[in-house]
Image 1 (cartoon, rainbow, N blue to C red):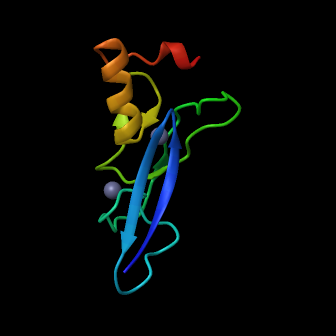
Image 2 (image 1 turned 90 degrees about the vertical axis):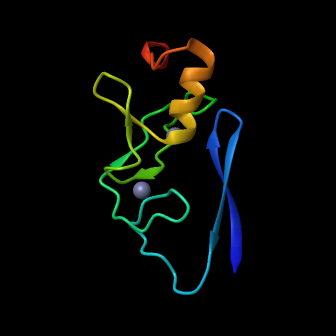
Image 3 (image 1 turned 135 degrees about the vertical axis):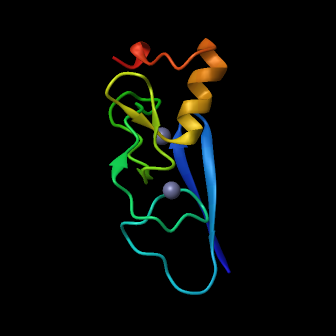
Length: 91
Ligand SMILES: [Zn+2]
Ligand SMILES: [Zn+2]
């Protein structure tokens, strides 16, 4: 089993471990999820220069209530900071 740490920005890191067959390149970024991704996390990274771009399937993408999708880590961060899924501060 091989593991790698993926920096998803805003101080969050995800550890992804894989066992056996390599996962498809276009698979969802969430560990253990093999669904094909259909969208990318739109949360800005700390330096505001790029977006998270975590690959997300329909099940793991979290809508911010507008027209953006967030990965679970960024959706949780938004809740921690604001109490609600309010992403206007990313504008
Ligand atoms: Zn998924
Ligand atoms: Zn993200």
